[in-house]
Length: 238
Ligand SMILES: *Cc1c(COP(=O)(O)O)cnc(C)c1O
Image 1 (cartoon, protein in one colour):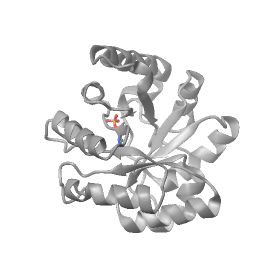
Image 2: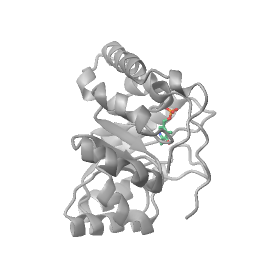
Image 3: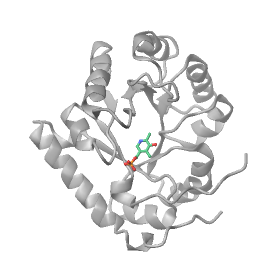
Image 4: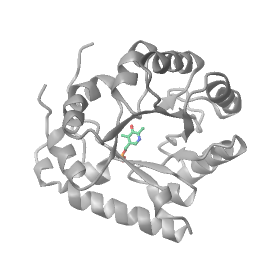
């Protein structure tokens, strides 16, 4: 499948944008009295094709984020064949019937959010002898339409994933509600991580990653600020 591009997208300078985002990360870390080296940039390449991703890799970007298994399957095997060092995280919802593909394709899953999925991931990682970095998604805004474990259930779910299923659990992830102050959600995520002894905090997107760094983010997921606006993904079957 050839990827669609929007008119004007050709003018996006991915390398320059990436440089600017990295400089902003460094400045935000310094302002917060943190070591910029603690913060990992996940370049969110969803809807963008190799013509946008290749310049990011050439500029040194090593970790990418995708939100659909099927879309990632269509572009990352070829890219990884040429750039075996590059890593990709799934940052979108995962259905249990796609766990096998996801474990084969990704290097991290940031959206572990229910026991059935956690058990399927544990089984499949053992079967494929692969250990993917896992993050538990917390629905900090308790939004009915959003994925993620509720804050009140987070401690029990962390225990299940880490202690019982022995998933390689790195930390927690959240996507704050669009219309609320993200800092409140970042602070809540950090509190849940701290009381459970988890070091990783995947939080912050193009609009709020500086705030997220102030609140302790170890992974920021930035798409638009690097790759430009996203074209609507064409309707897919299956
Ligand atoms: C798309 C997406 C991002 C990146 O959003 P931008 O606003 O483009 O930076 C981050 N996290 C998740 C879960 C996403 O789906």
